[in-house]
Length: 369
Image 1 (cartoon, one colour):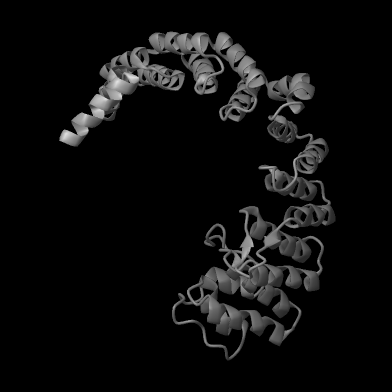
Image 2 (cartoon, rainbow, N blue to C red; image 1 turned 180 degrees about the horizontal axis):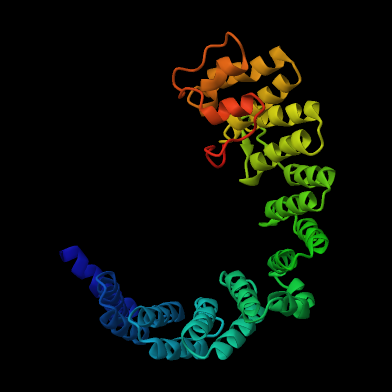
């Protein structure tokens, strides 16, 4: 206790920490009230903290908390004014971006809709690097589409050159491709998804994988399976394998794309050899994928359809040995005569027996299997 009092005395003598204490006391009281759901009290304490703050950072932080807590208290008009005051005082401060977008979102959702969306548009162009800018862009496009069919695309087309000159370029191109697809302009949509992937490639492009995935989907819709394979292979091309031999840098679409390649070779291109190779590639290179057992089973069935008994048995042995709990491991004997099924797997399901016999999926087949 004596040491604490001495420290406080020294602080007061050297930097005049009485005001700092006032800020901290008010801020702490606000945090405590907020955590207890007493939002009105919390907003008042944060206001006191902003007045007592010595640094611009502390002042803006407390002012932002005041505005945000007023929203939680349902005092919307007061919250708007609090955001406005913060922006007027510190437009480029640490809370400037968040305050600008929160103010616009609040107006669009609860007040003057037209004013809110005008503010939102101003914010995304004035603050394109802000964390809320992507959400803002999507909200505007969705709003324009709700107002009129094709409105989202028209809004984007009128502003694409300006958007592509900002940090929102990738999102804008991807959104335009999505809107083109919604308008059933499939060829243009496919080209726009590819343009997105090429302009904003791996590893910086956060939508790179999704863009090529949707391009491949459109290739199939357009009756061009070979192009779909090419787009999926472009998606997979940047996949990095660890130099330490400890795996790879996976993205969610990787194993999905590899499985889809196998399915396209099997179902659309009617090339069983390439289908088997694609399925095996997934099993061998995507060791942590939840689709690994799907790929091994699919490989086995393609081989079985070719009359290649050993080619069907080999992936089933791998399934039983390495993925014993997979639902497919219970079908070992049905695919490969003499191979004992895994005791950890359920008995071979009827829908799987139908698939093995070439009767295709049955009505009771679970989605995704």
